[in-house]
Amino acid sequence: MKHTAANIDHNNAVISIRGLEKSFGDYDVLRGIDLDLYQGENLVVLGRSGTGKSVLIKLISGLLRPDKGSIKVLGNDVLMLSTKELQELRIRIGFSFQNSALYDSMTVRKNLEFPLVRNRKGITRGEIDNAVETVLDAVGLSQTINQMPSELSGGQRKRIGIARTLILNPEIMLYDEPTAGLDPITCIEINDLINEVQQRYHTSSIIITHDLTCAKSTGDRIAMLLDGQFQRVGKFDEVFATDDERVKPFFDYNFIQ
Image 1 (cartoon, helix red, strand yellow):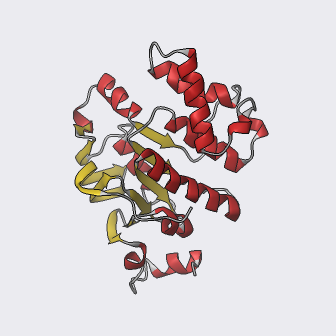
Image 2 (image 1 turned 60 degrees about the vertical axis):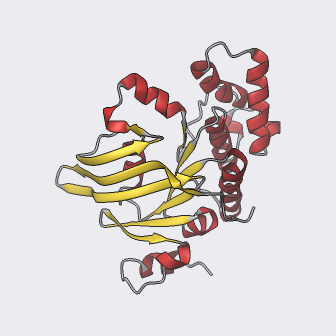
């Protein structure tokens, strides 16, 4: 699926970050960043390995606490939420982990049922079956329903991981290196799926990657993280229309036509 302009509401920021700082010992990972994710937008956070991209996701979800700054998600001040409130907020956020995070001892069906049974008290067997079939159809893997994760390819596991996040109908999707370790053809399929999820489920997404093909294929807007700050933010071509020696080698290495 070719990435097309989404229906983005620029008056509605579903994530709003201001002055965010995070250090580990003497290493300053994030140095006062500001960022908004708008309703319906695919926002790519681009940068080299070790620049703090995944740390940002952990801060947004409350898995880490910043040293300074504020984080608002769906109108909630993340730093002020109780443990219970934070758990309730996380249900509204879908996480697509780099390693897919499937349970090896469970079939695909059981992997998909798990978040429903855990978070939707009183849900019926029929509702569970319908939800599982719907998300498997959405990711194009209905035939894998009774397979084990070990029987799936890396791309299939990635798709099932995305299906498991979609089953709770999240308002926000957070993708952590969605194309890491995949072959070029499978990368294209995952990029197309990210765009399809945006259109079909009307999600707002942050896509963490160092893959320029992924960034160009999925991003309505690109935020390039350099030296702990967002140095360039805009459309793909705008971000790379520069002679900045920190940016050019990154582009040349990925080599996009």
